Length: 236
Image 1 (cartoon, rainbow, N blue to C red):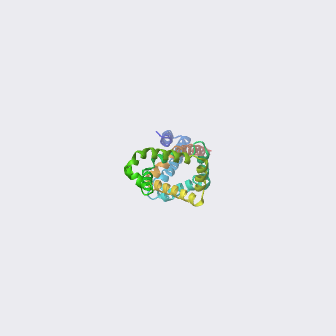
Image 2 (image 1 turned 90 degrees about the vertical axis):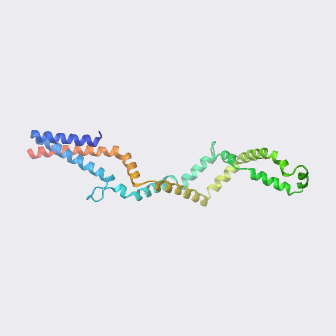
Image 3 (image 1 turned 120 degrees about the vertical axis):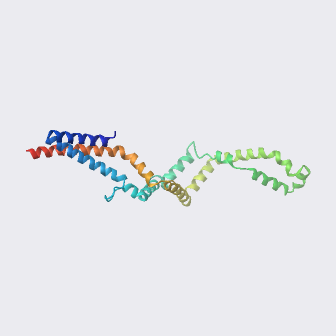
């Protein structure tokens, strides 16, 4: 049982006991406690659900687009600012675990480079000599060693301080920073477009339901105290 149900149940029990025993203090305590708890519960319910005849209810689903825009603005204005992106790039490019291009280079298909090299040799002054040795096919055993050597050289170059600095300077260009932010913004838009009003309602409801439940509890407590005070004052 949740806190709201327990609070309302206790309020009803007090109300019933006060009515049966004709005890004004208990009756007022139960009545005011039930009134405070139910009022707060209804207010919480109206945040997430549309109640017919009650203007302003279902505010979270109704403001769905504004809610998405607020999330986007929060992320872009607080997290993905120019300063934060620049800080991230600086850390990545200067730390020991800096931007590692090795996995990317290893996935690059370098066969076209070897084929271009073979073509250049074939059309050069060495073409006639190559033809006597079997033509371009004679160079095929060199393909794999060539590709491996090219990869090693590219990885070595990519890990040099000069390349890191050049990458950092290029990435810090205003136009480049704008492109990075634009790409991030597009990704956020795509993810937010996957949300539905029901999903947003459930996300928010799950996050704050535990804390909002205490509003019902304190509504019942303070309502009950007001009821006791009212009963004492009316009896005086």
